[in-house]
Length: 180
Image (cartoon, rainbow, N blue to C red; front, top):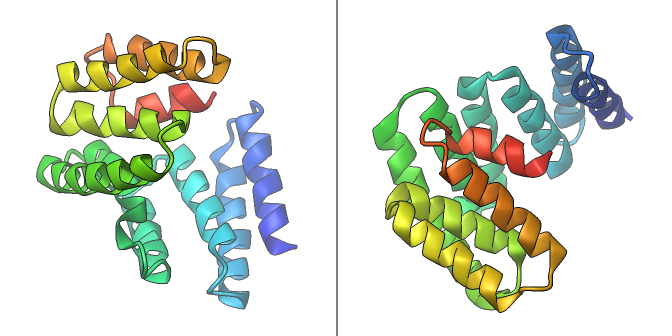
């Protein structure tokens, strides 16, 4: 129930009521939900969304660290989000460290799920940060060529290319753009 109330407030914010008090209240509900059941990932994930919307990246890193601890089998699972948060905080060395780790993590999952548009987008984004623009474009382009009739792949490919052509765009901006 507490988690649901938090999500409702986040949704209201996203639907145009750009009042950060909605996010503050959502975070209070989500914190209460976490206190009630600290092993449940869902309120952590929703709190993370609220913090990213609020652009409170320091607190987001704390939540991501908690999520990594809960996910002890895959501690690198959230490294891409950590990298984006550190990038927003202008902590380049930390961002690069986590982008490199995330690239390894996503590439290993891509071997298991080679047709996943979302994983290919993630690998392309991590390649952009770790190896550069050309490697990222090749990754996304090759995937697009392998799936020419898939509208989801086309959507991800177009969004990726729109963002990659804007050199001022951060990974956080790309995440927001692709998920709209």
